[in-house]
Amino acid sequence: MGAIYEKCFRPWLFRQDAEKAHEHALTSLQTLAGVQPLCSLLAWANRVNGARPIELFGLKFPNAVGLAAGFDKNALAWRAAPALGFGHVEIGTVTLHAQPGNARPRMFRLPEEEALINRLGFPNDGAEAVALRLAKFPSRRRAIPLGINLGKSKTVPLEQAANDYLASFNLLADHADYFVINVSSPNTPELRRLQTQEFLPGLLKLMRKSARDRAKKLGARPAPLLLKIAPDLSFAEIDLILATVAEHELEGLIATNTTVSRPGLAGETEGGGLSGRPLHPRVVEIIRFVSLATKGKLPIIGCGGVLEPSDAHRLMDNGASLIQIYTGLVYRGPFFARELAHALSWRHREWV
Image (cartoon, rainbow, N blue to C red; front, side):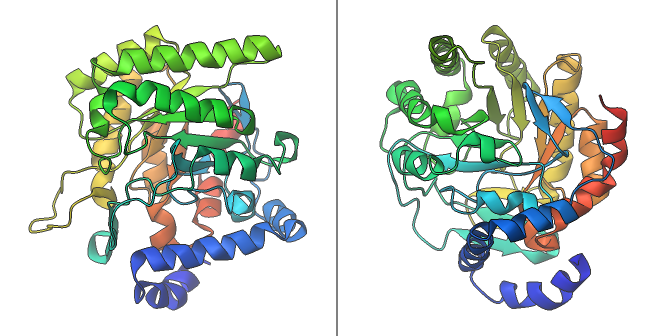
């Protein structure tokens, strides 16, 4: 299927504006999501035979491959993810206030490097609208875990960011299996300052307390909270973040978001976050560092530059427990997750 996509469909898609092509793909998956018998049949056909679920954060993942945040920002097509072979799906980034994002054009392909640049700026319908959409599909009907990626509203100053994240969480708390605190997108002004010790401890403390208080009131398990970090951090900065994550007992880390550097791309002038193959070596370095620094005790979801099964193996060999893809779908096609999940299936059989 991948070869057919690359020879027949990708050339046609690449003649379109990158964001328009993404919108067409999202609409197609939204249509598929509306035909649940077909989704169920495809999910059965694309399952990993004989694999045991991967247990993390108190959740069971049928395979190691997830759809990263950014593809389905408004919870329109996420129910089709199992049909493509995904073992989990993350929607968003969702902000408290609806916002249009940055001006177009704001997404660009770099085909020779198998990369993308985006400066979308969290365009989404807002937490309340997404919550109403998700409320139509109770958790008992999910085939795979659903995560929600939370970001800061652009109009909210950094000093009020913690309450902005908290308000989004409170609106969405009943509708996801885990939450990701995204403080690492390069496309919202000053957002990455939330990774610093000036803001991060207060943000994580507030989110952790709210999740626990809500769970205690309901007699349930607290929602797992993960932090998504940037690839442009120094190891000293990551050490400080890991100490804060440990202090507030977050369940995991997503490594990484897109990069503002341009490794090996001399002369590239488009602003925004770079994803795809050039990012991959840095992601491997960060996952290895985090895994060693935490003695393998902090679960890591590896995200960045997975375009071949060997890339997925490399992330997991260096300490990732799960992986996520997005740019890989653009270059390898809609069933790339299935290919990766099957390539990683030997690991599933070893894990209990």
